[in-house]
Length: 87
Image (cartoon, rainbow, N blue to C red; front, side, top):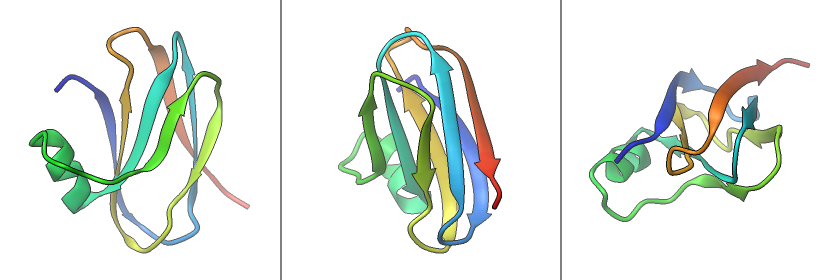
């Protein structure tokens, strides 16, 4: 499965990430390690995020864990940036 991804590492609950892209609609998926492995293996998985036709978006980590962020747009998205937001 082709996608762009970021290894966010151990991340605490409440941490926010801003995702910005240029191109078409994108599916942005925030997943813990187990869900990301299921995504890679093309098995059933759950994620935080969704399909977006605008950017930037902000995603909040729901609980402490090891996190990944994937952007899947069927090769139509260009120039994706992911930034951690600080208060």
